[in-house]
Picture 1: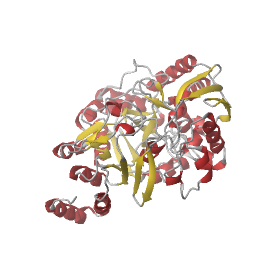
Picture 2: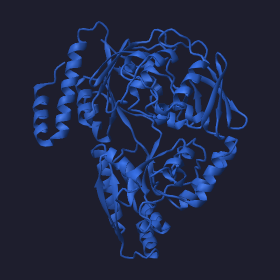
Picture 3: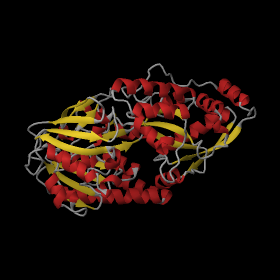
Picture 4: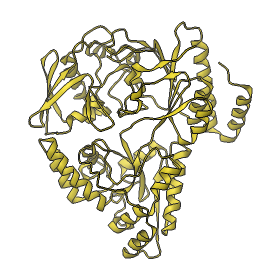
Length: 525
């Protein structure tokens, strides 16, 4: 499939204007062209997905937590549970979970499930997975680090396992959504170099080939959820413009992580933009612990900044109304979520009064560190700066690549008073391990510490029942509303482009960081 010559001429001009971004686009389109030319000889139609990220080692289900980086992972490995759009835990590989004290949990696994190798799924897969996560390598991986509290796993029968924790964790079942099981035998026999195509899972597809920038899969004949599509190809296309162009040309059937600004181009190609649920919540953190002498150390200043940003206008005009402003860093259904906590209204006069009361009648100057992933995000930060300027706050926007920003976080110095951040809105209890003084480890320095809330969070973490944890966390969120750790924004917006021949299930936006790939198919002539 070739792009029209007019499109190619436009891309060539863009290459000269945009430098690095255009070179990435050109490379991506060349890659797609090669894959399509190769795929044209295949008997089976190929369903193609473009993603901006891969996990660094496909075939390793312990490496990452969320989409889009785990798109290759969920094609092969099933999670234990799913989290729906109400925040409720739904069974998947695990059909039930129970605890009496929050410390000892008993899980039951689904009967009749096999790995792609043909071996049955049993409790031994949980035991072997825990053994891996307790190794130095396993603890250093993202998923293993999320389960450091597990001390032991014991198979009680073929489909029942007991998991023991070092401390009570009333929300342990929620975290099962990021735990995906490889087959113990193929995992043990593989090496990091060959895992991409050698480790068996229970998911809908089996990986058969890996090339630079792509992975190819065939249907898993052993899958308990057999896929509609016979073949799947996932392409690494980091540049957003390249993903959009690939979708518009029909080179791919699904383009992950597009932007609101892409709507016209998507619809002109007879495609659709669909929202995908993701767990993070966007906010602008106050790095008080990094710069304790800054004006943001004053609660009145932090409240003023919340009043000064017109979040309703931004969500309606720049985000097309897909999301709404929030007044807490927790999603509906999360432990402690309080529907009575309204977003801070836009009130310039109140913001100015609070600043004057804090000793800044003539305003103040602060800066923010951001790592925008596209023009849409940069427009948002520019609008935030414009809003704050009306209240007398001069905000300097400073850019940094994501990797550099992460380094700054662990070094305890963004070089700014504010930083664009995300909160784990489905699991606010765990989020405090990363952004408050509960997370003081080595040189790591968190953003914001509230002594009263730290005490409440510690009590919630030690709670033995969900009800008591929810009650304590609700008080934490109420306190945060009055003593804000940042400028509350909105749920993170993620949009995907669905091509004209792609058939996707109604469940597309019903589960957090999960796609029912087995239900995806192609409408062919």
